[in-house]
Length: 432
Ligand SMILES: Cc1ncc(COP(=O)(O)O)c(C=O)c1O
View 1 (spheres, rainbow, N blue to C red):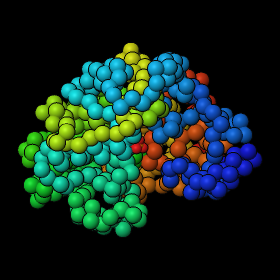
View 2 (view 1 turned 60 degrees about the vertical axis):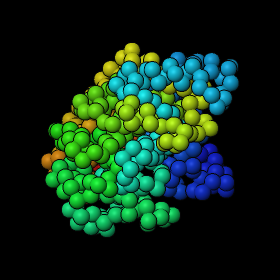
View 3 (view 1 turned 90 degrees about the horizontal axis):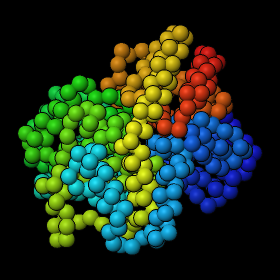
View 4 (view 1 turned 45 degrees about the vertical axis):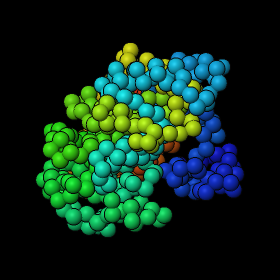
């Protein structure tokens, strides 16, 4: 879709003051297509030309209760009345930490302002606790914009080499190659390769950081027992297991992936759904590890961490999640997944629709299952993008990038699903 006149004019204005006219590279969709938003409410988003979209991007996932949820807004407004940044503990922080410990079964909580910060701090804690430096991560997993993990997130294939011994590829320039010496990368869902690399390097490995499902590669699911296998290896070799729940936390279940997959990590990171779009994040975990954070021991801080408005928003969001908001999210996602699968089958297109209903992925591929980044990389992105382009024309907005799941909120209605499914069927037919 070509953006409309007002969006275009606003984009030109943005480009004069911001590189590519955006504040995150992921938001740049090209010169003709990049939209400028005007407002969003509930399940909908409007661009500068007042074109309305059913929003299945939800700001890359956070807006679990819908845009401008009244309960969240009113709690945030209440917080504004008392001030925002104190560099002191406030009651909202305590209340949210209590809710997180209850919902997610973690012992202790520290705040951050973004998922990037949360994983950065968690890795530091793991390094400090173990006295080791290396980080093991998986191809196709993304953990934010710090240098420690911006490796083999979306490496070019074949540039990333043979899957048994992947070449480490930085996510662009400016990431010191020396830091790459502290990173080990293996394909997801391959127990043998993982065990081999751990056995070779365990004395240097501080942590294995893993997305419990590949929320940054089309919601590829872990094979049965895979996360438990990581847990076992970590126990065996004294490695800290960090589960990066920035996308899955308080979304795929009240207790996130730990509850959904029945596995307990040592440290867990949360952001997105915990604040319904307000900038708030946390890293949490076991008392024997998190309890070591403190002056002269393990550093952590941040001027804005735990600010009143963000933690108040998180307080209200987690309250809604605790009272069952995810049931509606799952129902809508299930309806969409089943509907999309039927449409795809009717059209005879080889494709896979997988993942949890609240954040499912679609991969156009004739493989029986998609289990790692390289499977996704070999899939038909071109057709996917064309379908998405048509969907945007019809006012339905999942992300262009097929790595990005379809995110569902509790504000999406049954009627929205009907509209989205009809648009999907038309879009697919038109592209085929
Ligand atoms: C799994 C995961 N970890 C970390 C991050 C980084 O979070 P943020 O964009 O809030 O820095 C993301 C962002 O999408 C993510 O999906």
